[in-house]
Image (cartoon, rainbow, N blue to C red):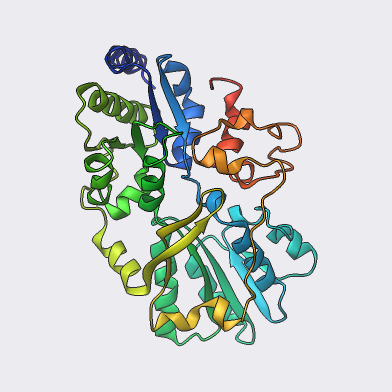
Length: 360
């Protein structure tokens, strides 16, 4: 970051913080979490400004039971489970997908949902299940996979849908008095799809300051200044502090893809429980691609990991170093919980960067 900008932003933050008093903000994107650590921004925050990490990592919030169902699918004869690489090491009750592969399960890492199509065409005798994880950012890719499979008449493709919608989780956090959040640093990638309008309820109903931020240090600082300014003036609203990457109306074409293939439903978030209308399920005619029904996968049951406090971390109630497992039995090399597995998980970010520039 440029020194002159850094000095100016630090002065602005300090001046605004004097007007706000003690205040807690939350970043809602795993990429923001990592960028804030890498750039050393936590060390620039005034002492009365706390910055928490929220449930912005899709890997972290995918429920243990859903990981177990993916493992069950990968273990079936004639079935290949396709997944983004960051889900491979996430623990379920029965281990991880990586461990399932070591036991003989067919697990394949893909870079894009559409990579599943050529795999399915090359092996028509095998069922290819795509483990569809992610927020609104990755959901359009899954929709394109479904549409392309239908267009080409590829009948051996199905989807294990675990996509999540960000806004219902933010509403849940907005109602949590134990978190005490006064403002959200909103995710740039998700906002590039859904736009600004859906966040309006956070400012209007819950009186929370909101700013969409980019991912460079300077862009994040601008968003943090926008949040403190709203709080100081007691005028919460939705500010787009990332106009180069987010249009106010988002991406209508991507939303149309999502709406054609999916409809909202209740969904279980790891550590947060069931959140109403926070997930997605397949619409007809794409419901025939539902892997759970097609493969008759048995329902899985969630069970807490002993000692793991990822749920409290995801709610912003606990900083990762305050967990007794952190850095001891739970490390990126041997993760106990999902927040340590993902490169964008709060625990993983604290472990890698927090010892040089983080503060509780």
